[in-house]
Image (cartoon, rainbow over all chains, first blue to last red):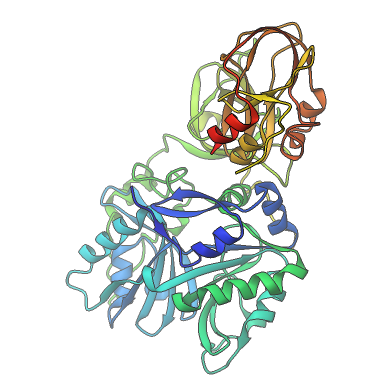
Length: 386
Length: 122
């Protein structure tokens, strides 16, 4: 299978990155130590290449109404220069992907999808666009996405990018809130900066046209180094998002899972309406309305390991057995790792409702041995100033 | 191509063994590089009999779990408790303080020279 290369591929090779195939892309798994990269993001800053993420622009007079129809959120109500986390579901309510939608100008939105789902999302959007006055275009190839994440991210960003009221979209960096965006300058180029991320830290995601991606990446590395910034790979990204309790498609989310199953029912806007006040019959609405009213068969929980061995995706969650052997299965681990920040194993798992209460003592079948875990609230980690 | 200590011999499963008696066994820098940060070691007990080429434990990194194979047959006489307590030693000093166990050797599996192993590790 052929993999796609990021516009920053040569930078990764020069930095000695250990590469991995991810969603059809050849991306950095880690540059040196994944634990060191994880800690740098928690304590200083990390630089991520996210160019594998899919990008779709939606433009036209009915762009907002189209997104209300195609996605579960109320995107026509999203203010300009704001972003929102949302999902695209199938007719049966199953999640096709989780997305971030940005409203960057009147009648202009773009959304970011997971690399592995980029084609699915694009095809579904094109199908759902029938009858709407919108243009749906894949813009993945022309843009690189670079994230600067961590407590020092803002200082570093200020050294590399400059504010320009002519392209800012009306916001100053000082006032930029979580899930808001603004235009900034990198030399003579304009870039779009969003205060979003997938690490549980403050940070920014920056869209830049491909020809300027390498200079911008290098500028962040150079400016960031005195602040403790290091390049960080997908391994650190995964352990950071797990500590922050954020779902990853293919693990906590898939086409057999509804947003309600994943504890994300709040983003499903069943009551969104057209301008005339009639309900929007968005794709998946009937199934999701029914699901909201039914008792869940499974609940997504956080698990803290009280032993040393981490649980991994796919391992069975079981009732603890007195003799240390795995008892009856009550769930399945979706993500698991040793938490570098907390120093003990953490995992997310779907379990039956009866064993989902905080403090419930469970076990995970770690290759035949019952390792002790206890149900804890998500997220595992929340930064001090959040 | 990486350099591997010439005084050691190597298994195709990326363990090394020295020629002392009892012999010391560890995993190679090449294996560690592929694994990433090691977070957990499951090693045989002292007194256990191990057989060349069979699974005798696990080495777990942040991202994956791999089986440990014994490069030789024999009886385990010591395990590296320091590495069990601080598996990062395996990353920092795979050929030194990050050794895994010592064994009274009764038989050998297929073992490679440093040069042959470097070819194998490619």
